[in-house]
Length: 223
Image (cartoon, rainbow, N blue to C red; front, side):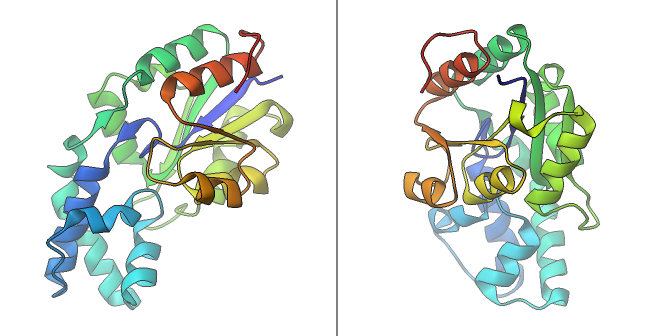
């Protein structure tokens, strides 16, 4: 029976795409890369920044580090607030918390920014553990984030689910033998989630709430 739930943040609990893509646009412009259409930068939501700049733009470490710094130059004071929780998220978290589930954040986003987002929207108190990456580049890999969240929760794998909107979340779950729950209302597709090993896939926050409550015995019908 489900006792612990790890949540990704961006694209799972909050719709952070506007702030992240505008920060990416700002960072790329500094490198001489002009992308006027931020809708084409959605792949920045979810994975670690360093990997995204290097894999999509072929940056070496020097240029990648500058790009990350410029991204944060925009995102930290402005972009972090170009963000909002998905409709029904607080109700879902409250219901899970009241059902006795232990909740955690497992995000590749810098931990200081995770706290900033959660505090801004009044969501911090729902979580027993909050794990993100370090600003110096440590613990950006999703596997490391999941491992630390499990350690801090003292959770058993067979009693734990990982919820996220991208393949990285599903792979992190599968690598630790967790229930992998994908959400399609974020930035990943059904096919991306399925191919990455999602055991369950839901389309709305309400469906996610029902699925989690059913998995911990609080509802009769699951997704």
